[in-house]
Length: 112
Image (tube, rainbow, N blue to C red):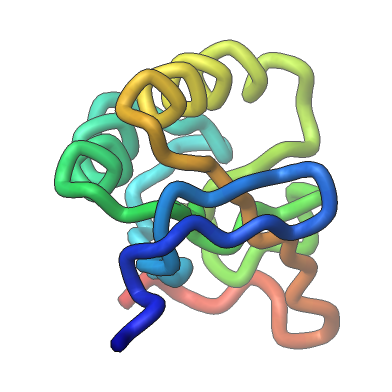
């Protein structure tokens, strides 16, 4: 029998199942801010039953973004909308995760 739909505990976090949405670069942020696009994109995965929903790569500095449209967490202003997304995901019974990113010397590539 498969364990896919069984809970999985990782330290102090218990995922309701083992379905995870991997980070997908969306190139949809302005100045690193999440918006309604991110809420709908990530929230729909939680509403669909994924146990873990990961954001796209979130840049820890503005200079370290892969592209100018990357999600960011370098400014306190980024917190409010990301918190709204986490709340929505949590209310659907899923766990929100974030992929931290710094592109190093490959930072600041042109948008696709």
